[in-house]
Length: 521
Image (cartoon, rainbow, N blue to C red; front, top):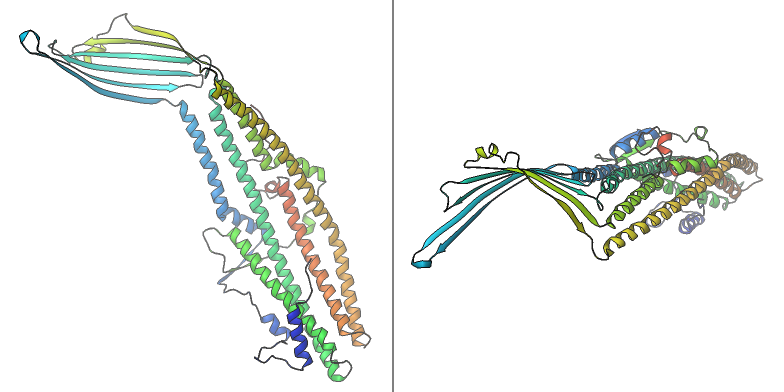
């Protein structure tokens, strides 16, 4: 609640100047200004180069288009998508090639003479290899060589075409374990979409909250300006009565103090408006500059458009639609996949391999493709086995994966409880404030009537200026409380929709992550 206690130094200065019958201090600073002069003073005015009027919907749309934080958040989904492409590329075919040259020269000086001999070979290979999700590795290659030696008059060419297949039988032999990395990367992309959705919901909540702060600041300024004008009229009337001899001179003290209080409140209200505008401008501006633009809010907090559904409705919606809950459910699925991957690592490696090929020999490279072995071929097949003794590393990885899965499951349950608490707290707060609005409206009406009574009593000489000032102060406080309550209810309505995960649905904004995530494998 706003404190209306006067600042002691200002009150003492005003009292001293009045008691001495002076309107200024020794240095010429005036302490008693008219209401018109006080209203014209704007200590927090900025050199604004433009003015822009915004509705609430326009402010939200502008934030979604230009907010720098949202731009950065959107890039996270694209970054996560690159990891999915990277994992998918594991199963892409790859082209390989290599070439090498070998040369051997020997000198034999035995039996009384020297003899030189040499052997050289040039070899090249080109092929295609691919790994399949079934745990199968395929390699298709063509290898060619040319050999020269001192024992042959002509070069000898050899070409071999072959196919190799390796099939994992135990470790790496199941499709679900081989696709774990790809499925995890896909879940990361989906989780990033829920992160963006949660960021957008919070951004809209912040924009609407700052927008209503600006509306509240404008309303407060208007209330204080009106109250200052009323206090000025009361002071004028009091001074006329003092000059007429109907009132003692001390009656003017309370009236002047009341004007000082109104001026204090007006200064604070203008300062709060400057802060509220900067907070809203930061959320809205993208490549432009809104710091020196005066933003005017033209939407009003129409309470008839917003009503509270039953508490259970918001709780049920939160379980299905909250972005943080759905993102955590995706993390649970990711850790379940990690258990599958590490369980596969507990198995020994047992691979079956087979290699089949056919070679051709000739005196030229081109003839090697036509000069084959006929029905002849080369074939190799077998099994390879590999098992670390103890397999402690794989055991540790699998244990860690299982513990992490339990941890994320407990985290999910905790987040769900926190979400329900968040929804219930905001619902109770909104319901309380909604009930207070009508009561505060009645309070304002009664305070207005009380002020009229005190003013009437003062005019007929039965009341005092102090009683009128107190009534004015009570009316001002009740009007400020009503304005703050109305705006706060409007803000809580948005916060409640955000807490239930349905803010984007109510605002008609389409974004990924609107459906509940079901934990599945």
